[in-house]
Length: 136
Image (spheres, rainbow, N blue to C red):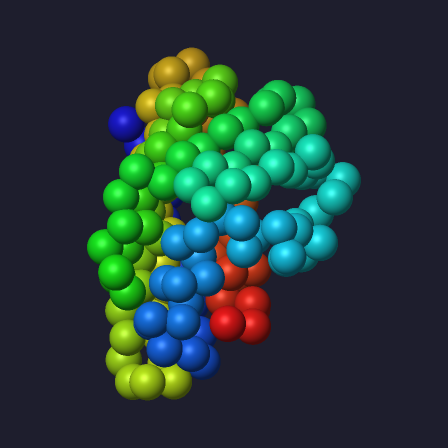
């Protein structure tokens, strides 16, 4: 297993507001235009799962399997060429200052690790920045 972790991002809202929005994947539909349309297509959502197509990879589906209010959202892949788990971690510093960090743990075969590590590192960082830029 290989871990990829984003830099910590500052969000100017309470952890409760951030958690409430991110813990219901239906809310991502309202911000899907923030994701690069040339790389991510055919996004579908419900409260617990999300599915989308990524060029050169195929369809990826994820499901929320654990919610710790105002702290953690854990997602696992249901359909993916590489099995993975992703954590959205929140820490409230003040009522208008929440810190967000994403961690992706992927089961990457050794022979592909050097090929996919950089895109995964960049992707997890871009996703954290996108989530931090949302209006909660």
